[in-house]
Length: 188
Image (cartoon, one colour):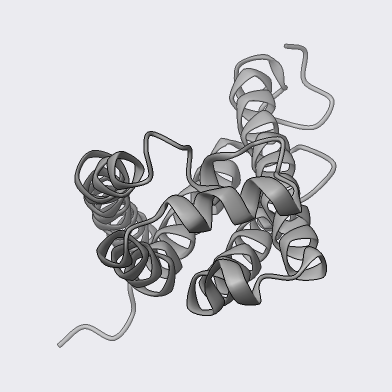
């Protein structure tokens, strides 16, 4: 048995882990996007779900959606919010953070591991949003308060904003990896 690992072994293991996380993210995202969400939206008269409203929503919009949901659709949405959509942010967060870390040039002034952290705030907002959406679904339209709708909407908006920032950082690092010098002081 070999105790010391080579750099190639570590890189291979990291690539394998990334591949597994990426496939898992695609699988969970696909189940939600192509099976669960369309069924819930159809049962809600075609209304967009809370999670997908980039600009957020107000109390009346939230109440209208909750009223439009059939009991079965509300149950399915709650299951998605508390199960599938609690796993998905963790998966996309890991994939995004790893991609940012790998795309960041080693000679970039901010270390790649620190740059990778730019993906975490979106994940945190997404998980908080999911908990608040679950609270709205459990309470239904009769127990919905303007404060709860406003808090959930706040986290929805910030999830999308911070996800856009993280994807922007990834794209910027990908471009930089082609133009940033491989060694300090080297010409590009």
